[in-house]
Amino acid sequence: MIRKLHSGLGIPADVLIKERGASLPESNGIIWENFPLAEMKKRGCFPGFSGSINELKTYAEEHLRRFLGSVDSSYIEPALCRTSAHYVSDKEVDQFALLAWQVKVLQEAEKTKTDSPYIPGSITPEVMKELARLSWSAQGPKLAQEFLSHLGVKLVIEPHFGKTYLDGAAMMSKSDYPVIGMTLRYDRLDNFWFTLMHELAHVALHLKSDTTAFFDDTDSAEKDDCEHEADSAAAEALIEKSIWSKAKVRQSKSERDCKSLARELKINPAIVAGRIRHEDKNYSILTNMIGNKMVRQHFRS
Image (cartoon, rainbow, N blue to C red; front, side, top):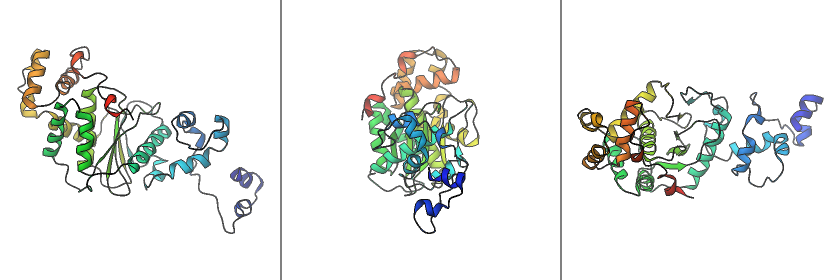
């Protein structure tokens, strides 16, 4: 309202704000109403607000600035223009919804304590392989969250917002700990473990500061060099190339051989099944082996 009076009637900002020397924050050309306000309201992004969607639209800038300012990250302001985001997708992504999701992830991350501080360089290929072996357990996804906490990495589960087509993301907080966000939009073990390893590879290889972030749609056929590197590191951590090249299951496509290789490597069979399906681009095979609806149950809260 103050901005409209200031621009429409020319009344000085400090007079309207009733504070000498006060000025209005830069809007950077942002159309605040473009944020998914209805979905954000439903998901509790505006605590204390109980008005209608029309009221929310009227005062969108005020509520959104409060929401965006709720996290300690120097990434948020440049992210409004998406100048520092790495998101290669063949779909038209709603950038405002993407930012809303990121802030929700960072909010949850700030509520979570890690067991140890993060040490740059601590995420090695050997550590990633050790993490992959936790998939052997029925409690693997939850154990993975605990394992990462010991490394100073926070794993946050936050459902995606509409039109983000998002599986996971890696970002660095201003407090110098990495945050991995996952949406579980595909509630499958094969997708969970590959996405987790892909994001962890970004942490190890590409994440240098809190002014950038990596967002991933695992369905996308378009990939840049960073995405190819993260894919390769994730694949190697789950099943080494030297082993995969000679794996019998690549020819047989059988559940028995899938389970046999998984036992040999002490990983979940869903990881083997997922690799076969992706490699062959045939998603009608091994459907009983991919761990459908077996991830969200570990993160009910």
